[in-house]
Image (cartoon, rainbow, N blue to C red; front, side, top):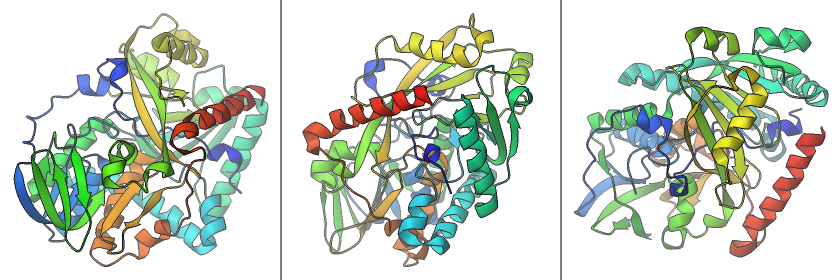
Length: 448
């Protein structure tokens, strides 16, 4: 059975923009964006309006346009400027909830279908990169690590169970043998698998946008939605225009609550924005990189509140973690993150940190994906609750919602049948309630 450590925040998490950091992300600094797409002006009529130009929204737009639908995408800022362009870049098989949620609610057959679809989500990244020629530094390989004996035991048991029940093969190492997979004194065990991987998320988002536009999708940046009027024809309004469509896909993820009262108020209590942060070092030498992580995997530990890291194509270490449950950016963030990095890799003590950035990952109460339909017409679809597995799962979600719009909802409905609950405490108390709960989990991480 999938043990408790799988039911935690995970590192593919989608990071929303957080202007309080006032820092350019490494990703933004390492790309040349095209000119901004014009904001929506006037009235547009299409088959499907998509709200959000991140991975999920762009994936849906590509799939729908390929099926013959006319699609318009509305983005409040720039393509990938929020969640999809700022995340850890880790594309992970499975779900943040673990398989237990699917087994308990849907039964073993649909749990297996969900698992297989998570594998297809990884394949979809391969396919889109190849089909659309997206250069985004895609690398296969993933390493799970444990920083205590008790956590090592849990890791090995979980990996063995996953291989037996779902066929995910891993190569495990314990004790001194861990050094052949990662050159760190911190870890008691490690497990490597070759299905998951990592990429440059902003390059991928920009590549998806270019692919969508080449297919004929209309993309409007700087077009935040101010109202949504439901009906057989849905009207999506911005400050300067409106889109009339037969169907709408809400793919704003953790930004949806910002517009919730005007767009989808019933969704707002179902997700919680949790801050998470990343630093990037100065470039290391190729020899240093090969020593630190010989197979160049993405890495995460198995704490409830975890650290996650990987190497970039230009040989920087990108190190993430240090979550915040109060919506306030932690004090001394850069130094705090650097100290955590040095705990893992003492040999980087003198290496400079050149970038620090972060934002919000959206989590659902049960850490499962929250996909579904709104209203009596059932023509407003939503995609949220990726809970840290968004890099791969968003692409699949876009494909599934396109199938559902086209009348083939069997795969979409596997996820739509999952039951979700509001976070307790209402709009004023749910954030402090979660913050207290996470303090408990941090204490448990330290004691295990």
